[in-house]
Image (cartoon, rainbow, N blue to C red; front, side, top):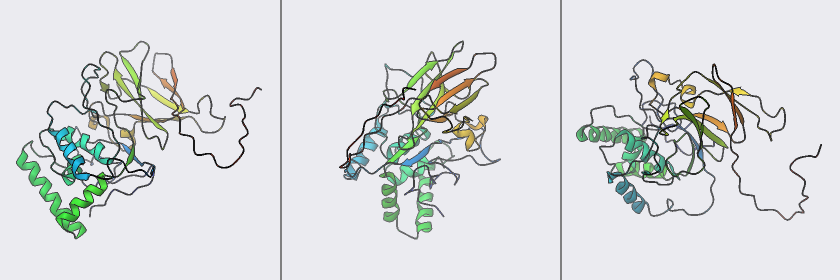
Length: 320
């Protein structure tokens, strides 16, 4: 029986209802021995975004939003990026859309997995973003698969076709705070720094603001193209310069994919990423090279409304 992936709490494991595997974070986790050598997995963490109380463009006007999505998908010149994006180029940026809801995330995933098919409604977006269709790239095959998933959903929820469509729209309208989505040209808060004596650079890009998560991956310095672990290394993360001593231990970091049991041979090219936290002091160790250290950028949080109290100002750093 399929499980509706929302609502969910910050940091929760989200079950994508149409992914091949049930244990996922808004994506599919590869199966055991039957998993192909190159998986279709898009692994990222979903945190529920705080409710601002305002009605954004996703809260109303669903039919107009769906039309925008279909227009974007049908534009053959668009090149929405993903974990297998084309080489980074500032001169040819992809079509940029905000990632405010699960719809915005899943639409990118669906297009990347099935560029030859344009989803007709939210249910099709939800199905295709799960990567469950593994057949040949024919419209007839993918349409048959979607219809089979519809019948399964109607049976599982003991509802109607209209109910399933409404449920898909409700799910995709949910605002979410995502960790693990690869950045696109023009995305803010992305930092690329070349590694000494290497053709590769590290790239830091924002994850969930709610969970204060940042991501790291490796890219070719010449092109900006993301690559999976290109050499032997160890990555450690611990308290930053402004973190009190003893506040948190220094720990070894493995990629998000490896933490879900995805073997290197099964990762999509350039999909690997490592989850860090704002303000952490990180050390990258490479055999035969000096260690590389860097501090993850801190993002400013909006100051909460001050209650009716008197504020005593103190210096940020002590003088002793």
